[in-house]
Length: 209
Image (tube, rainbow, N blue to C red):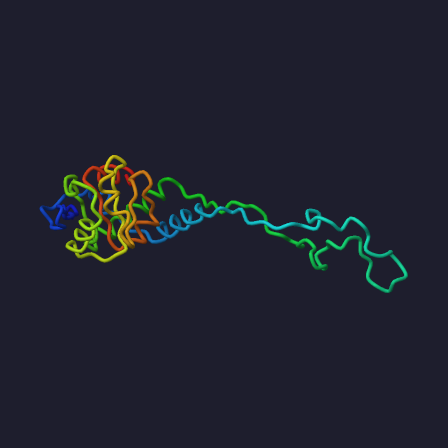
C-alpha cells in the first residue's frame, strides 16, 4: 500500500508539492465505534454538570405546621414547603453530577488515527507551509482557504508559537484554530477539511501514535 500524501499549501493556497504522511497514522483502519465512543466522551467532558434544585429541606420557610393534625378534614401536613405546595421543594431534584465517560488511551489514539485517515482518504487534509503566512491577515487566510477549494467548516492546527497563523484564521466564520495538544477527535470529525502546519504535523502524528 502506497504511503498517503497531502498537498503542501503555500500562501496562495496552491499545492507547492506533496508531503508524505505516516502510513500508521493516516492509513490506519477506521473503527466507527471507537470514534463514536471518543467523541461522546469528549462532548460529555465539556458539560459542567452543575444543574441543581432544592429539596423540601433546603427551601426557606415552612417551619410551622400549617394546620393542626386532626379535625380539619384536610390531609395532614407538617410544612408548606413539601413538594405538593406552591413554593415547596422538589421531590427528586437534580444535583451536581459528572458526565465523564472513560475511554482507554489506546482507544482514543485509534479513534484519532481513524478520523485523520478518513480526511486523508477523502483528500480533505492539507499541510500549510510554515512560511505561508508572513503577517496576520484574515483576508489572506480567507483567500487561501478559497483557493484550496475545500468545504467548510475547517479546523486549522498550529503550534502555540505560530501566533500569526492563529490570528489570521481565528476570525473566519466556521473555522476553528487549535493546537496539537488540544486537538480532539470531535473537532476532526466536525471539520469538513483539516489544515495542519508543517511544525504541527509531527506533533499531531505523535499524538495519534
